[in-house]
Length: 51
Image 1 (cartoon, rainbow, N blue to C red):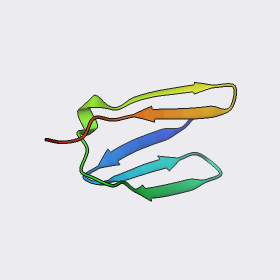
Image 2 (cartoon, one colour):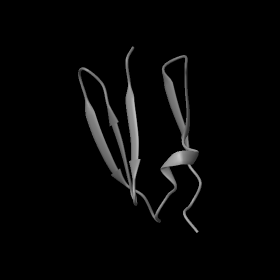
Image 3 (cartoon, rainbow, N blue to C red):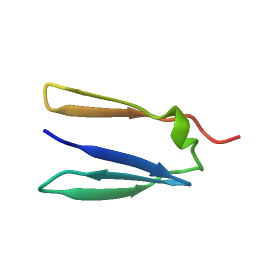
Image 4 (cartoon, rainbow, N blue to C red):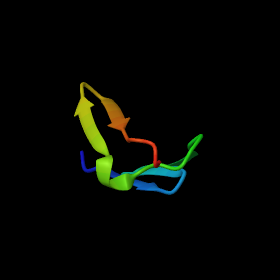
């Protein structure tokens, strides 16, 4: 499955061929620190807060 994950300011966007989700985060994040994993149908995203 091809999944595109993007972090911008205080939003997280996840897109695939059949869905698109945009979530407002509680704070600004540093997109360069984003790490994702996809295991057994579960997408995990870890992003550091912007200081």
